[in-house]
Image (tube, rainbow, N blue to C red):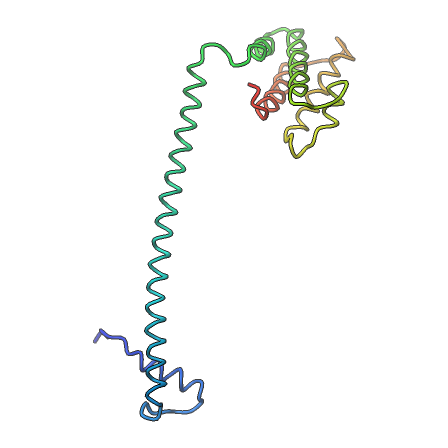
Amino acid sequence: MDYVHFLNLEYFILRVYQIFAGQNVDLSQIPSQTLALLDYIAWTGLGLFVLFFAFVIYARRCLHEVEHAGWHKRQEEIEALHKRHDDTQTPRNPRWEHVLGLAGSSLESDWRRAIIEADIMLDNLLTERGYRGESLGDKLKNANPLQFTTLDLAWKAHKVRNDIAHRGATLSLTSRDARATIDMYRRVFEEFDYL
């Protein structure tokens, strides 16, 4: 089988001309200026195609390098964060460590105290951040959900605290419920970089 080792642009130009003219045309019938112009357009188009193709390959390579560098930078930041977290001997927020200690106790009364302490921390946090209101409930009502993405979690955790405060010992609180409530507070505090 013979392979074609050249590109005959005049043949393609002739075929395009035949399609638009609607008739069979001999190459000698097309004016030489038209052929020269079409030949120039074809070669220019081919040259532009090669340039754009090379640009696309270059852009993809650059994008891959930037993505790779960004991934490595993100990994380094995560490792530095973990290292910093592991290296710190003193807790970043001692009150939170106290809450966690109470939540890890085997006594239901300690779980209640942990939730109440976490609620007090939340109230202090919102006051520091400029949220207005007489009580924590008022501050949560005035909060903008677009700026406070864990607002629903804060409401749920605060509701458990209110149940503890109003129902007292009649409220049955399990270890699982206490851990879930403390976890809601944790997620709120992490949003505000409070831990």
